[in-house]
Image (cartoon, rainbow, N blue to C red; front, top):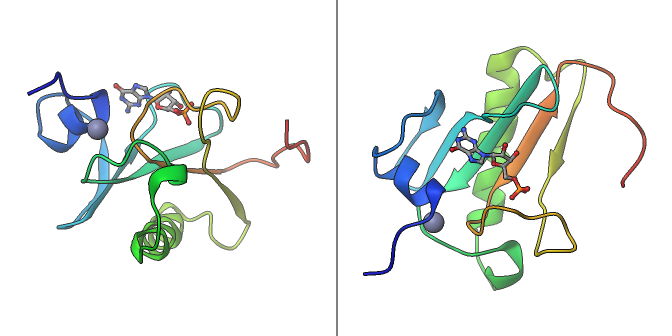
Length: 113
Ligand code: 5GP
Ligand code: ZN
């Protein structure tokens, strides 16, 4: 079997992470290099390389639902937050395992890049 990606290794418990949510399909943990006071990654357990390869799926709805729940738990839901999914090289995706960024805890810039 090919070497697993870093998020598959976190899913497998081989690499530690600061978890905020775990269920049979989805995990959420703190980003190692936070870009905002709250920066959490919401990640499907299945290795899907990018959102571009998701196809017809209810998974994206589940990822957003978990992000909303974690935002509530973190106490940023009322003030607001941003959900970001990078796709591919020019989209700024570095880890080739689908993930959703939950960013908040400060006023985020209006720029989309
Ligand atoms: P991307 O640029 O692919 O959308 O985002 C990947 C994110 O994963 C980055 O924000 C990066 O800081 C985070 N990251 C990369 N490796 C690790 C790791 O080993 N642990 C955690 N918690 N986050 C990671
Ligand atoms: Zn993976």
